[in-house]
Every structure is written in structure tokens, then in C-alpha cells.
Image (cartoon, rainbow, N blue to C red; front, side):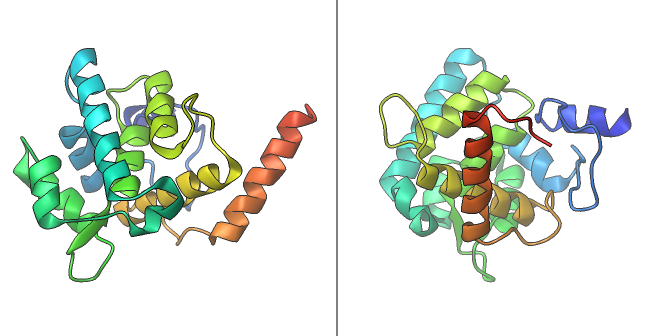
Length: 192
């Protein structure tokens, strides 16, 4: 289907059979295109180096527990992220700005969205990047708090990009949904 092809082109893996009204599953959205031009575009070795540098920048800027404070200004963005495509870099910074004056972006939001939406990364690499960034553990497992932070940042970033139309739910609702999902998975209950 057309929505299946669009979601696959967005790097989601084509798991969405239909794009509901709350989602804009269009690989041609300006922010999605700009992210694809800016992040994870090299070969496997280059992607590893880039991912390591982005994770180091995120962790240096703020811990996953305090991801809301992990703000990068324009100067840091230009020196650490924006190499190569100035137009795409400016567009991503402007769209994902956390303030009306477009002075800061949240590095956890940007990198999470870049990994999830990347048409260049296989699913296992996307998961490795997300777990590496959000987990405080060496084995990459996510605590409930880390998963809540991940989904909160990801949904807010997708909203800023125009992929998610309504504002994301509050963190308490995200936490409840994650706990419900984990309960279902642990009990081997069928998901509806």
C-alpha cells in the first residue's frame, strides 16, 4: 500500500499498515528529509563512528535521567553536528528548537528521531543506538524510567518535525502505557 511504502521510506520498517490521522507518515516532510541528509549517511564504519560521537555528545550534554536539560546551542550544533549539509542542519535546528527564538535543541530528541526515522539504518542498529544513548547500563537494557524518557523525547521530537500531529501525552501516561505493555509481555498475554 502507499502508506506502507511511505512508512518504509521513513525508516520505520514498514510496520505501519495505515497512517492514522494523528500521524504524517510522509518521507518527504522537510524535517524527515533533512534528518536523512544529516545523519547516518556513510558506510557501516562511518555510522559506528558517527553514532559513538553523537552518544558521547548527548551524555556530555546531560544524562538520560535529565534529558530535558540536554540542550545544545547553535554554536555547539555547528561544531559537533552540522558538518556537511548546512541547509539540512539549519532546517533541523529550526524545526526541533525547544524555544521560540530557536536558540537550543534537545540532543536526545534529535538523535532519537534521527535514528528511528533513518532510511539508512537497519532496525538492529537503530535499537543499538537508542539503547546506547538511553541506558545507563553496560548491557544496554532500559529501565522503565529510561524507556519513559526515550518515548517522551521521541514523541516530542516527532511532534516538532510534524510527523506526530497532536502534542505528545504527558510522561505519566507514557509511563502507564509502558508498564501495561511490560505486564502484557511478561504474562505472555496477546496484545490487542
